[in-house]
Length: 337
Image (cartoon, rainbow, N blue to C red; front, top):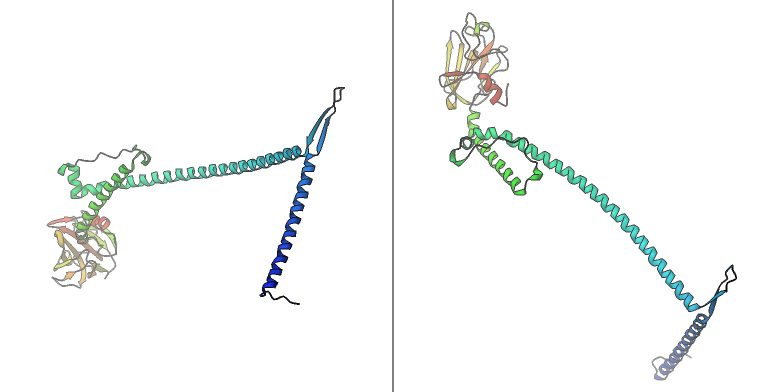
């Protein structure tokens, strides 16, 4: 017969049964615990006799020790062993960590020394660069007035080759050195920018692809028929019909025929420069024509008293002739065409 749990009488019966079972279980557990505790007490009250029997005729010594004492001693011994083992393990681990830290410290020390060497090397490069920038700085108006003591400045003493390394300098001193070098470079940059137009309009381009056979100031007897005069320019031997290019921006000033120099082109440039191209076979420009640097103005010939195909190239500053070679070799970055 199935019980209906929703009926009050059945619910009461079920609750009574549960209480009865729980009471029995509780009594059983309580009895088992009491029996175990009594057995432990009984076992603990038992005694162990330890006898020390000497080899001589001395009295035998007896020790009576209860199981409680034995248990406590063994427990303490176990605790001591566990604590000692943990201490040894911890010490071993600590020693390993210390060794690892010492290794890291050694690596860091080596890295720091490497960084110090690299920083000192870079500082040496900076000082060398700064010393090399000094002549350029003194070439500027600010630098020249600074060197001559104008404007409250004074000439800097020469660099001491035994100057201390960067390690002996403070951060403020290093910052001041870098700032002074930066200001110096800014002055040089402004000066170079202001001189860029002058450099651009300076005759610095090789006018023809060839070889110099007569230098400035040499006798022209080797390249000019029946003449022993001194060259006011350079003779550049080239293939017949080679292109002649203007060496700087300018304006065609004149195109003339000369019994000595043959067909001759004169180009005027800014800042008082003029360039002259002689012995031309023919020209491709007109008087008054504006020219760009490197523009073709004619072709190599053998006119006038020229003994071979060549170009006689001259640079004139005002009314004075200048040696073209320093302009072609030092100012120009594009050198020969």
